[in-house]
Image (cartoon, rainbow, N blue to C red):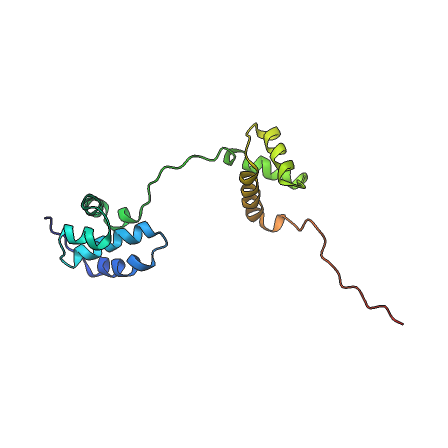
Length: 152
């Protein structure tokens, strides 16, 4: 069994992040290291943290190689977004020609880029565009005004 030395700063980070890190997988890794810092065996750590013994060894290897930063890393490969390359041109197009529906936006995206996406993906893309546009995007409908009461 390997020996690890945990500094007070590392212990404080482990103590905090095993419950407060935003990603549950990182919380689990921090829990494994916390249990290791308390002197438990790998078998006990695997049982208490509900991971395999190999995962315990892998987390400890990662910690030995790169410290806590290595454990915080989530290195899952993702697919690149095909519309990301066309984001600026589509944003400009939609600012000049606002779509009335997701289906209309879907057709415009396919016409402008040649990339075909489903309606849900188009809605998500438009929502991301509108949040990034910030003040440049306005309301599509005018605000309702209060009508004055008729006088008798």
